[in-house]
Image 1 (cartoon, rainbow, N blue to C red):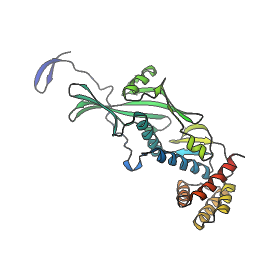
Image 2 (tube, one colour):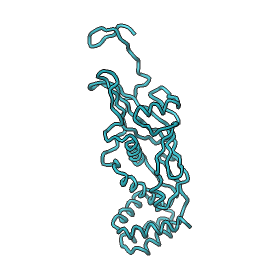
Image 3 (cartoon, rainbow, N blue to C red):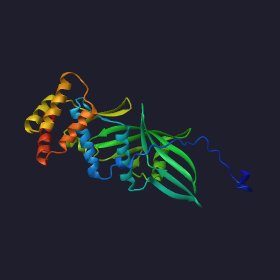
Length: 280
């Protein structure tokens, strides 16, 4: 507090040392082509991931960093009802404004949601990030995102203040450090899957479900739908299972691409076969 230099002029004012909260590291930007824009796209995405989990024969649905950021981007944009490249942009003092950027997720040993923040005017902005450690839980058909602790730069944010900070960013759905994503698991249930647990392993998020006999399901699908491309791919996957080889993401994607050419009746037949095994 005192006389400060401002563009070669000396004025009475205040200077703040913001080094402890500064964070100008690069933000993750989800490619426009990867964004989920409608509820139908969102449900189809989750449904296909559910089918992938069944076919891969590992009793878990795996989400990598890109896939989870597609989900995070969609969830936050739905809750804040904005369509811009940021959650909020507002004037805070005279010509100065604050920009709250789109959140993104980092998956390591923990899950961390980053909320970019910029404060300034014209082309001069101070940059930092609000980092939130989160835990994912299942509650019926709903996904619960629980915020455990936060930090801005080197400063730790008390849990009691997380709700208040996020409400400023337009996230009024966050109550008592929790965000409820209603009906998140409905698409999984439509694929006949009930999620029982969520874990973070090897930089991926795993949604676990009760195991089923994949070989029998694939055999029944072959019998129900006589399609040369389907038969060849199913034979390849069954052979890998019999020889304890890994079912790769490419295997699953190729099978799902074959499914895309089926009629509604054929897809319903596949769904009925899967549900019969899951309900046994």
